[in-house]
Image (spheres, rainbow, N blue to C red):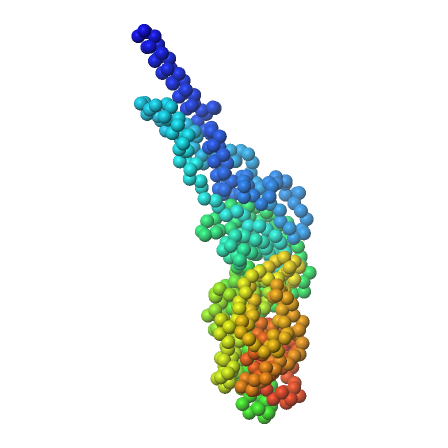
Length: 508
């Protein structure tokens, strides 16, 4: 009986030894993986391949393409993704980043019960798989590619909220903050070129991906500069930024002389009347940090500096908005649109406040309305002139902005003319381009004659609401009309003109 019992025990230990050896033995070498570890390793490659050479994994924006460069599309303003590298690089990454099953297994205690050990291994998964790696940001979504100032071109697309997008092309690199999920980067190259891009979100760099960029040539008649942080500028703003368009002294003296004559004429009709010039600084002036590094603004006086001095020398008032805009340029609501050359409703409100703080010194009832007397409706709106001049679909590229409306009762005359084409658009309506008269019937408010360009749109209603009678000359009609002035006898003649339209007032 003892011999039989001993034989059973020996047979049990032999069986246990065979089972243990089978479990720990690798299939080929010490670098093979069991099925769960192999799946984990594949996820690691998908999210941590530093050069964009491996599989796109679950975050891929499209299928891999291993087509040679000769198969790239013609220059039609599109981008296509290319993935470099092959299977051997992927297998190498797996072997380097993931430990083998033999290396990760812990030795069993000599006294452990095999049944209990097996149960523990099923109920408690390995520590490696219980702590998955945090996902890195996926690559930005490319939508449009177009030349701005050739050989520079813009890539426009979508990205994660708050991301910074980085791009490299032919040794040229560019980084740009996004704007509510949209981004633009400015690249340099002609024809079909390769671009590597990735985004950084909350300090975490995403996976870089390689694209073939085929920028198209726009057909718009206004040049556009792709700035930083999803900000676009007119090329015609650059002379002001570079200070290469400063008027000569003869032009300035002639302008001052005309202003003196107009002040005399106006005060002969209304002794306390005043001419006010409110020249709106261009976005390049307020946001010089968003101008590409290739453009450097020199020291010295700008055209705007000299024109403001000439206005004041002629006896008129010049409201310089630059200090107020510098104070509010980083507020939550933007002063300027990103995809349009004009100031936004908030920028117009800041200017309106500066204007009527001055006017209310003589007319206390004209004190500017508080900001909470308006509703500021945030959202994505149809953008304006920049996409049009870049030959892009402005209906699809949305600009995040704030649409202003009165939330108090105002005379119906004030809101009779819609400022924008529709409430989903930030493009001014035809109604505000015409000569119009708005009368609130209030004798305690000033009468104003207003000459303006398209920047008058954003203050059209709020200026009229703080006035008794407002006579708007037709948009872009800057000429002084003695007959109109004598007929109106206004308390104020107000010029609202953008910085780039200064020639319209000094040469008129």
